[in-house]
Length: 354
View 1: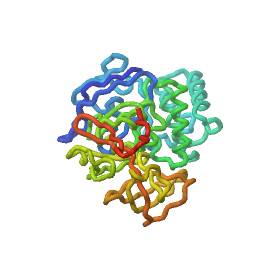
View 2: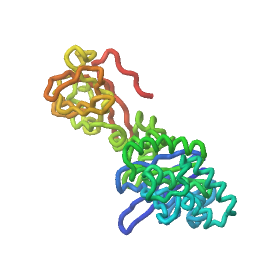
View 3: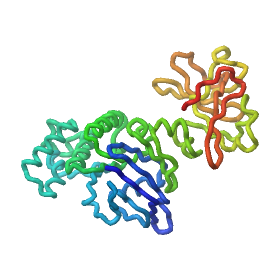
View 4: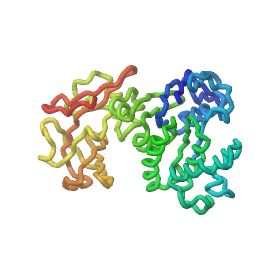
């Protein structure tokens, strides 16, 4: 289903929750809708579903204006954060519920439910009740129920929020594979940017009711269009006086108030470990965080607390230790664009991410 949204606005009293939002989604795409709490994500989702009426703007599915079309006639499946399963119904009956309401033939209902039980990995639990299932199984039932009426669009509102971290990771891969197999256009809201980056074909970032940027996870990460996006995606540090950093003294006055640095653009190590010592500065280790596959190192450089990564193969640093810090590049912003600036003292610059 091709979706087109144009100049969508929604007010709640004096609060302008959605402001001139516009975007286009191609058929079969999985879109991750992310942003801070209260940014407008769920409001956009509910207007697409017909659960909220926009104050202005247009929503079109396949070229047909949907603003006044009732929710039940939009061809939408909705997966909620807390499953919303019927406790008194078995897995089979929960999945079949929408089909029964639509008066599908009983034989076709049994066939469709059997298809979805197999597709969602629920074989063997069809006669169990929600309280007899794990959190992951309950969420799979919710997905199967939403897919049962063969919707054209699947909307997911924080679908994994009520599930523990280990199961969430398993369900991410499962969801992506499921949607690819079904081929259904899908939009899911999440607060977890790692979840969106891993699962989505494209990400839409909404902040204060506006779309800040939309694109593939890679494009958004490597070329953020606004300071908000650059700070929101990934683990970054805003710099208040970047012009004082070695190799960046040539920055224009005022640019330092719109600078940001990502951990992967910083090297840290003991003397002799860091490449190009002539371009590095001294820092002090302030904190260490073990991440399983690497260390996150927080280091103070001239009063600025920077974050970077360090391989587990390297000797372990210690809090309070003096280290060498090499900053490869930083992001700079003005009101119209963003760009990267390399350390001017480097003789072997890292390849720019393009």
